[in-house]
Length: 123
Image (cartoon, rainbow, N blue to C red; front, side, top):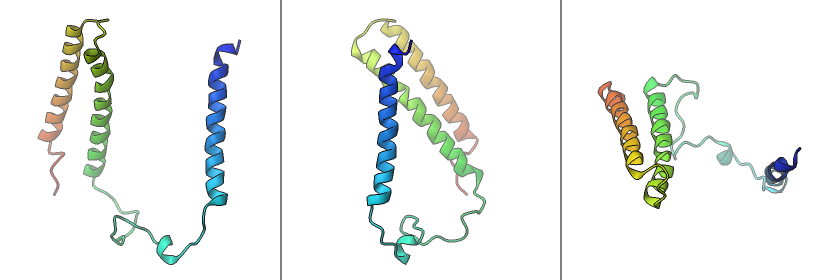
């Protein structure tokens, strides 16, 4: 009953043990020489100003979400390109081309909408 899942379970166990082993090894074998400079917060070479609990503008989160959305949608182009340019003609290259063009048009409409709403303008 577990025969098909046995390789997966072995691999999963190896991954968990490897991750735990690396974390424990870095904890016990890593150098510990804390100094005030090493313990100070660091933000791109600038000393931090203010509290970390300040309120941020919603535009920061909007840009982050837009980045994630367009990044993930760009990842969808990779399998399409490998099928389209790879030469496998399972669905027909015409259908794949139209399908990706519709996908890119939807992306473009979303980008135009966000741009029109002023999400990329910083005050």
